[in-house]
Image (cartoon, rainbow, N blue to C red; front, top):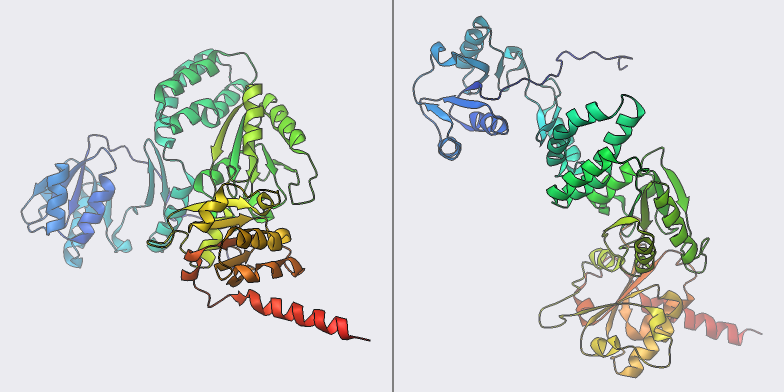
Length: 483
């Protein structure tokens, strides 16, 4: 049974090392690893190694670390604030540890926890921000796994943003009373216009935004992020999209966005479903535009979560126009569009040297008019065509393309629920495509890819479209001859 309130045997602290000596004893891989870790700080590295391998010598040459090429002596520890025993020799490491303790210097012996006064953490470095993950030596690999996850969550701009914040700390304490006013300023600083400007690399603009925020008596301005949720799999969401979901006050999402992705947002965020599923819109586009503008005027941080990529059949253009007209700040965060996910599911090259060098993204409804759209000429000349939302008009798509000159035996790949565990894959030819319309069992979003490059896909785990086409034809004949 785990303890109700487990106690740490090692208490995490941050030690000042700026300009201070840190001694590393060892000349091999263990010493190199510790030297690289310490090189992320402003400590002065002192490496004691009578013989050093090539990698360590290269590190010393590149960083200017002090190298004492002599047998270890206790005098080498003089003035150090930390010591690392990294020789790989147990007897020498023990001697170093005993000497350091006698001198009152904290010591770490690599892979010898019984000799350690402290443990080195897995470090997420966003200087001056640092996150240290420790396991008291019990699981270094686990610490590295956690470091990797946290590293992905944090924006690379966090360090410059913290540095900018430090320059405003005195002014904020002088001009803003303690309590809610000061907290609101810092919340807006780290999640509002200054943070967005730093992330965009506009440090001067970030400084000006922070000044405006500090001096302004106006309500905090809202911000809308038009975010691509990807095709459905949670691990295909971009890191930036995930960060924004964790910061959002309100998440406005379409029906096709899975609940698992919506749930990746802040627990206390307001969640507003707005429909946008084919044939079932709980809100019109005009109502969605008005909602985003209103939330922005209220000072809310909003994530407008769209399936796939917001700029690919996501009607983001109308929402951006409404936000621009209302003076509401917004960003666009791309997502993995369904065509790319479907191609990945089939291991299908969307472009193939010598076969197809262009792509068309379209919807089946583009072919419902009396005239062929301009892109049809590209399809006939060899472009790969990705058809969104085309199941209900599959026969018309196939018929119009064949009529325009595309060969009936052109390869076709179809994916339902691209990227998800419950995806279904079908393969066939353009002549087989009309059978999709009779597939009442296909209830998820369907992506169709047409073109000569499709022939290079992996069809081992897919079903033939023709099989269902023949089954439907047989059923129709049986129905006609029934008494």
